[in-house]
Amino acid sequence: MSPKLTFLLCLGLSVGLRTSGQAGIYRKPSLSALPSPVVTSGGFVTLQCISWQGFDRFILTKEGEHRPSWTLDSQRRHNGQFQALFPVGPVTPSYRWTFRCCGCYRYIHQQCSEPSDPVELLVPGVSGKPSLLSQQGSIMTFGRNLTLQCLSDVGYDRFALSKEGGHNLPQRLSERPQTGRSQADFLLGRVSLSHGGRYRCYGGHKFSSKWSTPSDPLDILVAGVLPDTPSLSVQPGPTVAVGENMTLLCQTRSQRDILFLSKEGTMVSPLRLRSKYQAQQYQAQFSMSPVTSAHGGTYRCYSSFSTSPYELSHPSDALELVVSGPSGDPTSPPTWPNLTSGGSEDRLSATESGQWKGVQGLKPYQNVLIGISVAFVLLLFLFVLLLIRHRQQGKCRTSADATVKNTQPEEGVELHPQAAASDAPQDVIYAQLNHLTLGRKTTPPSSQSEEPPAEPSVYSALAIH
Image (cartoon, rainbow, N blue to C red; front, top):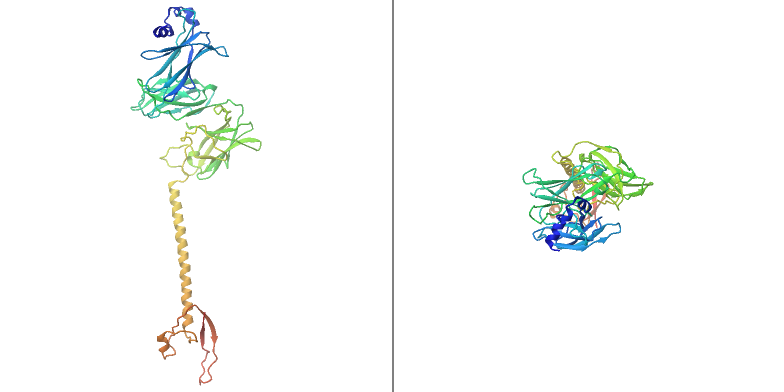
């Protein structure tokens, strides 16, 4: 069968598919890429065409100018489905890799199904990565509508959304709300258990096979899957002053190895910690030190298993945290506080460095006051030190003056030449003291003097060492 005829059969243009009865029987199969439609340059991928209809063979067609096709016999799976696995590669960004498949019967002439929905393989490039966010936050409850928004400063024409472990790659044409910007909304419908997981998005141009660098990952968590409801408490209390320390304690009696803390009103992924078993409960401590005005808000915590981290328990009761005192810098927008834990920290994503951004603990005026205080203490210390030194030097000078006055030289003392030549007994005697020890002696009155002095003379004996 020629490629052109095969393609026409897959489009459902054969005579056999034009009757209403046959069209209802031969429903289109499903086509997906294993393990993922996102393929590195030069990599390989497997395309799976599968159907509940008992087709004898499946035909894979690549869209493009020549529309090549491949045919494989079907294989029956254990669940009763029929499939064919088509190996594709090496995949390069030089071409667009868009495929469809259809199922056919071997012995029924020109009887094939409608073509499947298209699957395009994506090879990430190096152009500017877009941003992916959820307006509803990363923690969702059953029944809520989930919309993921991919946006970029680059004027992309289309966006693709991938889910880790997923086999499909939905695409949306971009909108241009502002000049130089592009975005696309992915409406994923009402939240179910299957919505939990890690998502990324890519930007591309309409007539190009090249795609952008992937966005940072976004984790979507589904609450209410597990039956337990943790409790959340705060120490020292729900009202705390700026600069103080505070700890949020999440506890559950159910055996859970992961505990989450989330803050309402933020689009940042919650923090998760491994639990510790204490006091017959599994718990984790989230410490905030020092507290800033950005810490104020409403908090909840959840429990989960590390083996299925996107499936959470029911939320704890809301805990309202009030921060009193001066507010932060009004020019800086509030961000997630800098949290530390009493246990080991284990974030869902190793690359969300943007998650839970730190806030400076000290304000500029506090830094100035600390600097002035330190300078004042140092100056006071130097002043006291100089005062003590000055008083000690004064005492030494007073003691030396009292020693050299009204003294006579004793043997072993070397006198200054000017002092030795002087005949006047009342002159000041200069002595050269070399490591001397002063001894105090009193002489009795002289018997040769007719008029004894009223008071005995006092001199100092200098002993040389």
